[in-house]
Image 1: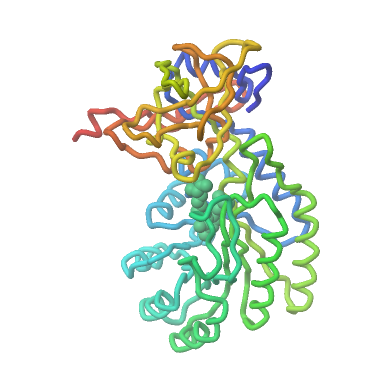
Image 2 (image 1 turned 120 degrees about the vertical axis):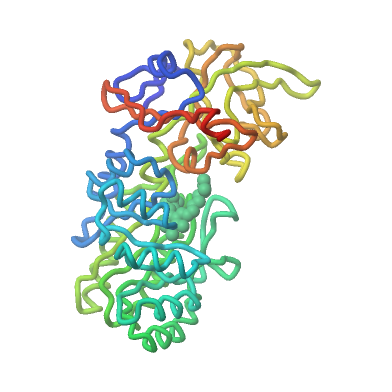
Length: 405
Ligand code: LLP
């Protein structure tokens, strides 16, 4: 996916071909970008025993799951629905881990029936899991007391976070596991999402590796996801080769001390799919107040909630015709009946827009469609995958009549 002279190319196609055929709003993804991101991360890690478990919540489209399976990924699933989506996309049970929160017994029974490894998020869950499935393998999600992320809502480590078993309570967890003859085969953590400072990730790696020394039967350690991608022009990408090199050294040294070559797992979601996707929309209204010029489009936070939920910046590119030199500050707003439904947080300088122009809201491949809703009784858009010159509908647009049944 490339923007060249304000023209958007997805694979080998020009965005206008997609708009002509499918109209807007529409989500479009570039197959190559997903594969490239996967390989880039996998290749950066020279430690021999590493797996990437894609965090399906970022984008659960079945074709995208299949692409990642083809590349060699496993799946981090957070609900019975995501387990089913992964199984339907051809993942084997041993390629899936169930990492949920506030987990009910019914959900654990479902995972057990599908032979999926359960990652316990609390001592309560561990005890209940032991009752349901004694003498089995289990993983523990720890809260390493440190967290990071692009917004408070997505920081998942530290004393304010609801996630994991507090790192100081692991002895208690070991006792509960022993009481049910559970074999703790894995330790897991996920400290947060949208991390662009690799040092923060590394600091948490130190914590889980220190804790791991007290567990003698481990087969793997899972560092979670969280690797960020740049959204705004002032953000820099993580130097992934540097990151992989540093980490591989740490992992090799740890395994040597531990006395066996453990498997290390990473669970990226955003890193793999965010940059593969764009939400295309059409300007249908231009209006003004004494303070702002407003540009209204045919989509809203029902389709992409990130700006509204986290104040997130998404690049917006005018793709309908070559961008003129003239720019002006505008607020791009959506068609949902709430004032928070804006895609620019405040004014943003964009090329002068007119009604009928097509815009691409970029870096929308992660937590875009997967967080979309039917709010305001509006259908969700189609999802289109471009592979080279080929475009395919990987999910049909919802029809109003199906929603009203
Ligand atoms: N593993 C676990 C256990 C997680 O909870 C998550 C994300 C991931 C992996 C993947 O994180 P990632 O690599 O994508 O950062 N809706 C928010 C992000 C929420 C992330 C929730 N957990 C957003 O749009 O920024």
